Each structure stands twice: as C-alpha cells, then as structure tokens.
Length: 158
Image (cartoon, rainbow, N blue to C red; front, side):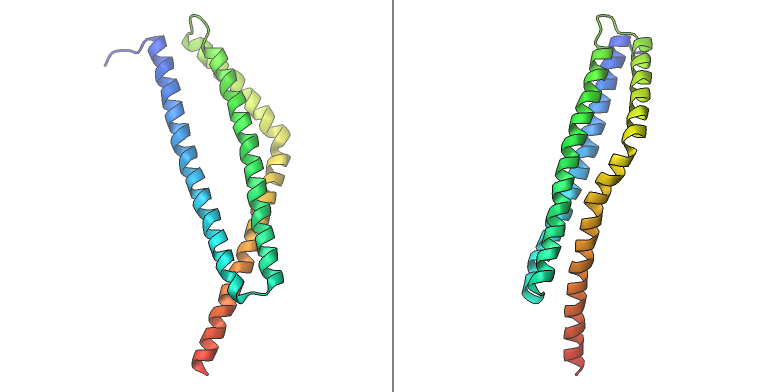
C-alpha cells in the first residue's frame, strides 16, 4: 500500500470525520424522535383513564423536556459549526502539512478542554432540564398504566 500524500490524507480525514459524525448524529436524532413520539403517544392514550390534572402535568413535563432538548440541540449545532469552521480554517492553508493539521488539532483540543471546563455546569443544568421533566413524566405515565392494570386485575379476580 502506498503512502498517502498530505493532500490525500487531509481529504480522507475530512471525509471520514464527516461520515462518522453524520452517521452517529443521525442515528441519535432518530432515536430521540422515536422516543419523544412514543412518550407523546403513551401520554395521549393515558388521557382516557387519568385525571385531567395528572394528564396535564405529564404533558407539561414532556413539552418542557422537548423544548429544552430543542434549545440544547441548537446550541450544540452552533458550537459544532464553530469548531468545524476553526478546523477548516486551520487545515485549508495553501500548503497544508501534517504538522499544520496536528497543530490545529492540538489548538482545538485545548479550546475544547477550556470550553468543557467553563460550561460543564451549564451542560449539567441543560441535561437536568431535559432529563428530569422527561423522567418525571415517564414515572407519571407508567404509574397511570400500572394503576389501570391493577384495577383490571382486581376487577377480573373479584
């Protein structure tokens, strides 16, 4: 196997990174869409046998979680775009070399580490705003279904 030229190496690296990112991000987005859709379907069906207050609270929790998730995705998209633009600027000089690429990668790593340190608290708060309402709504919905099953079982055995 022949050695790749610098230009081929950079092109291969860009294509590989783009394919990996697009595949994994698309897969996760698909899972999230299916999960939220499933939650909303279960929530909608629970309307028949739940009290209006519990049903409304579960819907509010699901909607709150979805709103925070959408906001987080917008923020993450803008951050990734900014990071990729920096990388593109660093490696699209007139004659890129492996050293240039490695230096740009090191700078990005340092920048990312600084970003993570500064915004770790915001990330945790964001995840709490997404996951806590989602978990609470899930508990409410599952409890409604369990109560319904228990009522059916007790009526059936009586």
